Image (cartoon, rainbow, N blue to C red; front, side, top):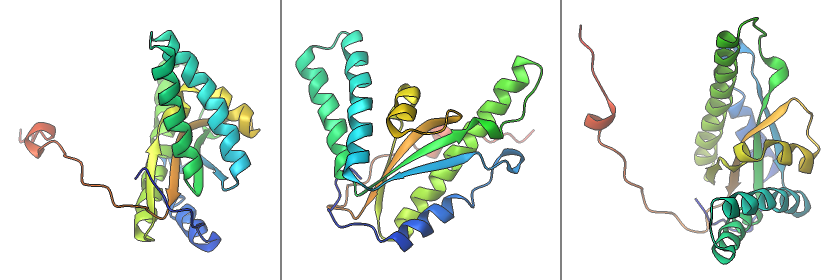
Amino acid sequence: MRRFRSDPVPRPVLEQVLEAATLAPSAHNCQPWRFAVLVGQEAKESIAQAMGADFLRDLMGDGLDLQEAQRQVERSRQRILGAPVVVVLCLDRSTEDIYPDQRRQQASHLMMTQSVAIAGGYMLLAVQAHGLGGVWMSAPLYAQSTVRQALHLPPEWDAQGLILIGYPAEMPGRRGRNPLAEVVRFIDE
């Protein structure tokens, strides 16, 4: 879902979508997800501008010419600004268990990341159930400190993704999926 109507999402509907996300399972039931919900244009512009600056720097560093890099940044900016609701999915690092060794600490962090991702998946299912459209953007992973600063989030909140939500302006076509034979391995022994 890339294009939304400008109709606002009613607050009770949005709260039901967010509530559904909190019902997701989480490692050790730590519920590490936090949601920064942007409905005002100023907040959406703030994050779009801040992330856009990082994105432009990265694209230029990748060797893209300025015009193409600016085109990609503007496309991303318009997606964010065109959504009635932008939810920033965050991982609250203060919920993580602390281990004395790096191996278990990395595994713990990965479990928390997976838990936030599952909450985002639940959110997208609730979006669909309410007749809304939604899309996940992973861009904040490349700009966690930028997102935190732009939105004045707590220092322990790490942005994991954006979920753009609104009423669909058009229904996108179905994208192809890999056949089961390519993604499943049955192990009988």
